[in-house]
Length: 319
Image (cartoon, rainbow, N blue to C red):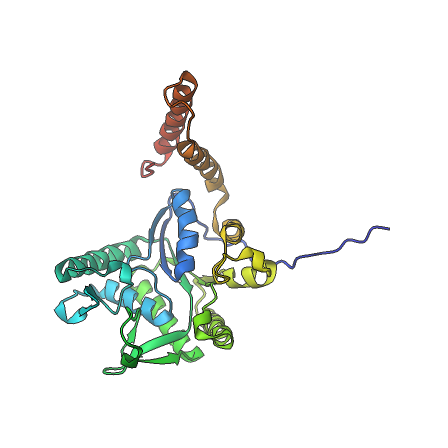
């Protein structure tokens, strides 16, 4: 007699009603896992914007970006500082830092304008929270998005309370609603392990984020939760799904979570276009043995015809 044995638990998630298609406009903000899902969204050529101020790990940093974008903040000299031969801003990731103060300020002001426009036009805003640990400047009590390798004596490290996270999410949601009442807010917790904080501290941090999000969702029916963290912890509970650093999900794990996201959030009518785009993307990555052969030239002609067909339906697509 054969006995059926389940070797994996499965996280239940609902198929959402207001799903994503090729008319949707997406804004993705948050931790480094935002880039993982963003790369998939980019690959399939959905209309999107990803982390205009770089990776933002905690709710307060995302709150600052959203509020500043919607209020149209103008960055000035007082908002930047010089350290280690570069100019930085405490509200942005170091990817925006620059040796020129003028170039940094131009980038900050351009990106804040672009973010304002994208939030106004967005159909879906996806926010991924990475940690509840924050660093607060000792001199003025302001919570920073990034320390930029400034001396730790400059900051006080603290764990955001569940109520502080709920308050921050409410500020974010209300600001978005004021600018764009039709946007759907999708929240998720990053499965990336922040072990520099400590094993126990990382678990505590994730627990605060999850508790805060669900307390917020109980008050906001236009927002949804996607269980990225739970899928990683319960369905993929094995170190073979991590990169060598044992902190970040590897490509297999990211693809698995993406497939779950696709089932929950991607509209069925978009799936055919996704298949067409994937065929084009694979064709564009093909490396021929003989680039001038007739067979390869015919192959390129087929790819071009496929591109023309899909861009006729969706003129915004670019390859």
